[in-house]
Amino acid sequence: MAELAVLDERAVRILDAAAELLLRWGYRKITVEDIAREAGVGKGTVYLHWKTKPDVFYSAFMREGLELARALLARMREDVDCVLPGPMTAAMFLLVMERPISRAMFTGNTDMLGDLIDPTSSRPAQIASASASYGRYLELLRDNGFIRTDLTTEELFYLIDASSLGFYFIQDPSPLVTNLSLPARAKMLADAVDRAIAPARKPDRRRLPRLQGAALEVFQQMEDQMFEVLAKSQVS
Image 1 (cartoon, rainbow, N blue to C red):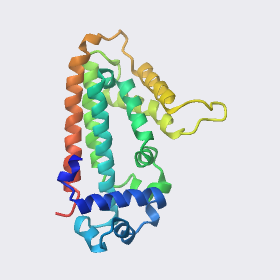
Image 2 (cartoon, rainbow, N blue to C red):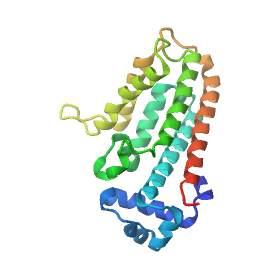
Image 3 (cartoon, rainbow, N blue to C red):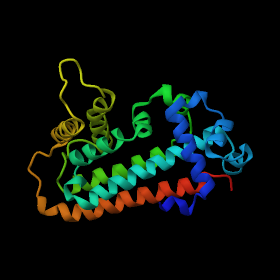
Image 4 (tube, rainbow, N blue to C red):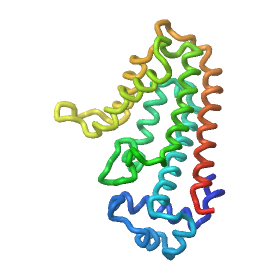
């Protein structure tokens, strides 16, 4: 994978070990010694790459986010409809739900992530960057007539986020609904988002190819920024 250009073989093993232990034990029970043992390196080698245990895991999360962004970009290139908010939200839902760490990040799973999801932490600067990119994407949609124009970018962002959250948190069907597969839930999510932000007039689908090109550029820039953050996350 491309991140190997900025993570040497030992660093990759360390992040792989941290991710595996996170799934197995949860953040609070893991020590740097555990990570080193799982990675087959000395404790000092871990500190050659990252100063603290939280630093190791934040880099692991950056890598996870980068892999998600790449997977979503691939879908957007393959399917022009995936640049529209409903299909894009559904595609992201399916990608997240098949990745346990991503799912924990999206749902704020404190049992697994512990203090790493402290909202007072300054670490989620990359989240602000991703939000700015998504804001530019929403502006593209509005300029091309694919979403409603009576709300601000911030209001649209909130509406999409609020419409999506329940699909992540209600991961197991209720006793009254037992046959909803993940693809079925993703389809419902796409419909919910589309209905929430649909424009007053039916959009001109002839604009889709142009929108696809512009949206790909925005999300590629976001991926590049995430890659740069990952590259700088190690001890220099």
